[in-house]
Amino acid sequence: DQQVKQNSPSLSVQEGRISILNCDYTNSMFDYFLWYKKYPAEGPTFLISISSIKDKNEDGRFTVFLNKSAKHLSLHIVPSQPGDSAVYFCAVTGTASKLTFGTGTRLQVTL
Amino acid sequence: DTEVTQTPKHLVMGMTNKKSLKCEQHMGHRAMYWYKQKAKKPPELMFVYSYEKLSINESVPSRFSPECPNSSLLNLHLHALQPEDSALYLCASSLDPSSGNTIYFGEGSWLTVV
Image (cartoon, rainbow over all chains, first blue to last red):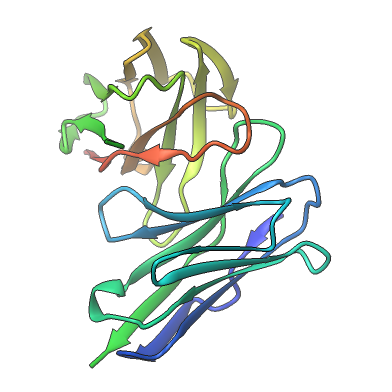
């Protein structure tokens, strides 16, 4: 039973355009949401997070939106750059210190 | 500084060998984690240490034995592994184990069991 899903396994975006990555979760007890970027054979790199008391958090080119009623979060990257090409994981935590990852979306930013 | 250091980066071991993976952080974090990642899958939690005590074991086989010698170090002792245990092993840490703290990952140790 996958509690965190990223329904798009891959996404291709042109350089300079907006990349939108989506994530859905099932458990309303999750209260902290994170996005990680990952290259093959490397550890995940933390990008941005949001707590359940907010609906938007922005850091430079990265913005995370949280819709608690829909149990949905998204990551916007504007403008997209070729160096953004990687696999992006959303991740959630609840009352325990257990980070549950989504299934991942491979982003390809083309020239 | 959000650095978690893992050694070795690559390890090849036979099914009868005993080896260890090591992890170190100097951020004063009191929660440390081991995750396992297979190809094309998300990382999966194995163990959580909270204030140097094992707080979560996600039903991991006993051939994996974690150890937390002090607040900065985390080891994963490996013995009698199977080829299907080959994976990327990720160490991570956070300020404390409560929700709302960012978890920072190391670069990982790539393990191959032959």
